[in-house]
Length: 311
Image (cartoon, rainbow, N blue to C red; front, side):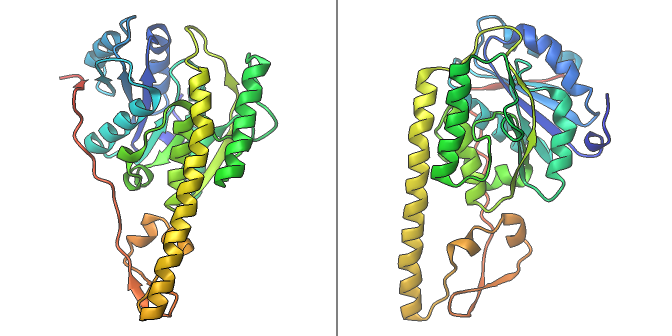
């Protein structure tokens, strides 16, 4: 079903895959039905079940399907980073989604994300914990780990989201352009927390829409003890980054106050790039106007990967 919120804007959905052949055969047509401007990029890590080859064949028949084939299993975080870079370099998509390829994220909710992001938000996440707990067919141990990780990460990092580890997200293009994707090294749960933090750090607006998360239809979950422990460590790395950033600003602020030069505080520095792009002048601590530039991350070329599409 085509929705009004997905017909006027160019949208790309990035799907990282490893052994998702059967799921993708059903999922891709459903996503594409959301609107004529919706396209899909599958980032496949050389799946033994032939996922990449199958999607490449589908791409020959549909010019809205693309596949980025990587030489081996390189992790969820790097798959998303590679996918985001490809979309930024090869399309003019205004909105970029990330979602799981196993039907745990319902593609019918895509219009709800677009509606929410257009309500003056920049990053919208699908939350399993916005209205109680909305998870189906999860063992209690995994639910406790996920819910507890969100509380833990929110408390330590200050990210204003009830669901910190969800992998169903919609980004405005400007968010991905502003974030230095090459400096994100996390994987799994940790990747989701870190990219939320990076967006917040840049001053973008984060919001949530409620979703119901259903355990995968077929195949095996990629969740592991290592992924969970990495997330527990990453939040402290982000907290340390935040603390050191404040210390650096305080030292620079004190130095500029002594010398009479202008300095901007953390709250001003965190304003989003879309505000900076207007060329407005910002008043510093000493009342001096400061021209602030726009920082945009470049899009490096993709190496050791091939993109296949129709034509």
